[in-house]
Amino acid sequence: MSIRYEKTAFILTLLVLIGCRKPYDPPVVQTDHQYLVVEGLINTGTDSTIIKLSRTVTLKSKSTVRPEMGAMVTVESDQNGSYPLTDAANGNYVFPGLNLDKTLQYRLRIHTTDGNTYLTDFCTAKITQPIDSLEAIIKDDGIDIRLDTHDPTNTSRYYRWKYEENYRFHAYYDSYFMVVDNQVVSRPADKDEYSCFGADTSTTLILNTTTKLSQDVVYQTPITFVPSTSEKIETTYSIHVTQYALTADAYNYYTQLEKNSQQLGSIFDAQPSELPSNIHCINNPSIPVIGYITAGTYSEKRIFLQNHDLPAWLPMTIYDTYGQHGCEYLTQGVSKPADIVWWNQGTPPFYTPTVKPEAWAATICVDCTLRGTKAPPPFWPK
Image (tube, rainbow, N blue to C red):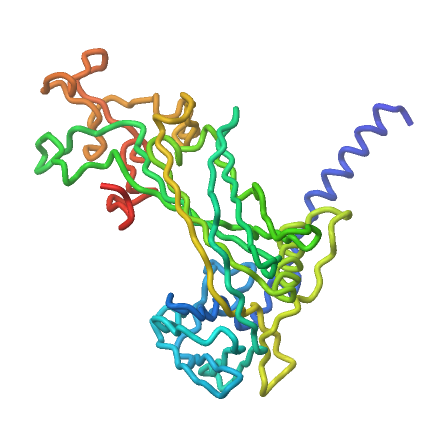
């Protein structure tokens, strides 16, 4: 048998094997257990306590959130205090400000509409110290957001952070005209689609501990990195960071959760393991519950960055991957009247003589509301 024939036979065999593959959906993907998920903090200070309840969904589900509606949620103290939370819809249960005795311990009692009752372990209240600084460090390829904090009493030791980003961005083109009743008219200010506001939240766990240090000091812990090509920093950018002091058990829970969700993918990574939740179904202990409830306070800090204070980076946004030539490609003729970029019946700067009488661009290139909102956040500077 010639070498050429052997190669041909191998290729044909490989093609047959590939063609015979059938999709396999393991039971874990299809089974809908609908386990209860509990998120939140029993806030012992003056800020609101917000507990979010939801149910797990299958990996194949199109929905990522299934709120648990109609539950009864109560905060209880180890001295028989009871504080019922209000159902605020969409799985959120709220108390405006408990202002509890921080020397006591607290837990949650949850009664769901399916007849199950869930109870958390009693939690020691952890008082979170202020954030000392939230700093934006400019690097060659972007902005490194880092945080400093400390506890002079040396009692915090375990920390968790989360953040929210808000930013102002704009479309690739500014559409000055639109069609109303088959007539081209100037686009009024209230129909502007050029400048919008976007938002994003942290999707990974941010943890740190100072147990190996003589002093309870966190220095330059990384929060997030914003690439120099990101549209988040093309105009104005803001980041709001919330800091939580944790107990050792809560820190161990989040550390295990991080390993299970963020450090998998190769044979050298840690293998998934059961999470040590402090929430239990008391009428059916075999039912798993996802989440870990803590008690105490939190601290927060916000900073703003202006593009004119940053290097002259060029953003590479969604527009650069749109179509063959991105948004640089304009189709002549008003077949998409809402997306008119230029029109020859105008005066500078609205008239661009280098293009033909009229030009329109793809909607994604001129309508920022497809990815953002026109209304600024309530905290946005005027």
